[in-house]
Length: 275
Length: 312
Image 1 (tube, each protein chain N blue to C red):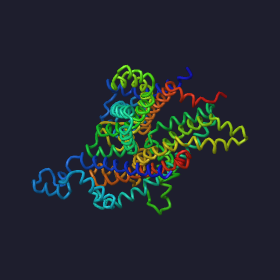
Image 2: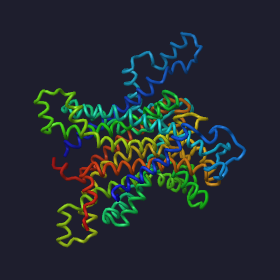
Image 3: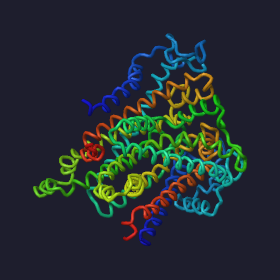
């Protein structure tokens, strides 16, 4: 049980942060856009997280604002993961010059700050969800490509793969039936961590007014609006930030726990002292 | 070793070329039709054609890329639509804020990473380690701009220890002081991430035979950890410090907006909102150039850490 403390803590953190958004898909306590008489109110029964400058209910805005954040993070990881795994897996499988070229390109993407990419796409396409999701997908691509390539390379020459090839299996079958299952666990770890990073990056971008446009709420943008009244009116700046941090913390803890249990070599490295 | 250096420099030049191509594609090809913005939607076809010719849009894109890159290298970065003045002094003055900010933040995060990482790694499993790891875990999850907002509120507005924002310009007495809070809010999350790497890597190295040998022959514990073990433990950390810088520059561009610092991030965001493409593409080229050059320096710094590369 003690081994799973990290996993459970992570699950609870993630659940606490994300469940309001899920509930918000079906029901929101108050209209997140309607203006109210109580401006910058402290938490109360009527407004559990207080209100913002326009008297809008912070809890309702967090519940609705999380949709965009989570959607962008999921799109970014799904998009970057798919393309990255395909590129990395392909590079690792063919080897030689092709591998060199693909991985060099991947390294180029890696040295490109995600924020800059998002700004460029924001200028090109106008601010919106699609530009932010594309930029973050590109940002995620190299990490997945590296994990996939390393995995494929380490398995490519193993006996069971050679045996399968000797038995007449084609490249596609070998990749799908024999190599892919071995990649599942490192890629799962990578996806979890990437989801947290994407969530963080999305909040930065929406703080910079990229992404969803007003009056739709977004977590990062709520913090920007709250900044002017902090610290005189601290509440609007507290809860959106706490929600982001809790969600990212949860995902990181889950990622670490998964890595610990899926990758025995890592566990040994950390618990080396018998004392 | 000379071969290694040459290979790295060649790789960096190639990377820079591809990155500039990416910037060019994003700014010059994707965003609709700049000539149409200049003349407006109802212009006569002749005016439109003239505008296209004036902007050089009637030539094929490889030619335009070549001339753009040539102008960039020659120092002619064009005119900002937004500020109605040459782009180069604008970008350079932005760089004079962003670069010191990123370097200060990198220094702070390395300091944090080395101290906390070493403290935790030499006490794996004990309460100080568990506590440190918990704090670091929390630190990596906090958005840097939120941390910035909170730090301003506490240290600058409530306690008035440091300036709340803005930048007085270099040469003024408060110039460095106004970079401290922004750098701190960048350094805490990044430093926490690096500290976890230091801890994992150092804990690994401390289990090696040569560390036991050092202890057995009577080397002091401080020297064993600080000299024998840390040097090897830092190799993977240095690799990711290069990557950390790319993120740090990106983060600096966000945090500048929190603190109202007149850096590249402010310029770039203003350029996006004002659709100022010359300004945006030059700022983007400078930022990516910076990242590529620094990762090259980190790469070469590797040689000092890892003698195996030197002998090749």
